[in-house]
Amino acid sequence: MIEPRRQTDIDALVPYVRDCVVLVLRDLSAAGWDPFVIEVLRSEARQTWLYGIGRTHSLRRRPVTWTHHSLHLVGKAVDIISQSHGWTSLSFFEALKTAAWAHGLHVNATDRCHVEWRG
Image (cartoon, rainbow, N blue to C red; front, side, top):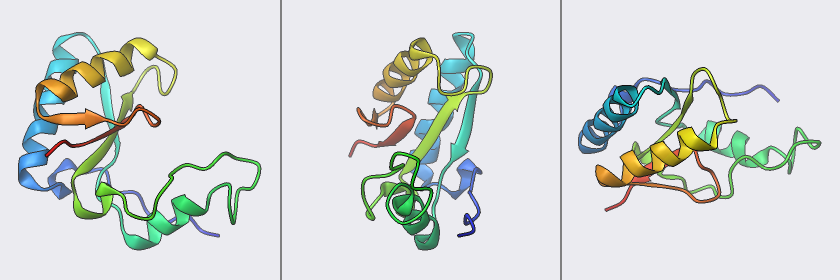
C-alpha cells in the first residue's frame, strides 16, 4: 500500500489555529529548541492509511492513529517534533506541551507530538 502524501505547510491550518501554532514555534525556538512541523492537514485517504498501520498493513508496527476522525482532517491539528532529537526528547515534548497550552492548544497525552485546537 502506497503512503499518501503528507502536508507540512502550516498555512493549510485553519487561520486561528495557524496563528497559535506560529506562537508555539516561536516560543520553542526562543527556548533553544528546533521545532519541526511534520504534518498538518490530512486527506481522508491519508487518515485511512495511517489508521491501517498495524491493522491492515505494516503489521509489525503499532498503530499510528486511533481514530478515523482526527482534527487533522479539518486543519485544527499539527504534529511537531524536534528536528535534532526526533521523537526521543521528553524535555522537548514537555516544552511543547507548555507552549501549546499557553496559546490555546492541547497536546494529546498518548501522542505527544500531536497538538490540537482546545476550543
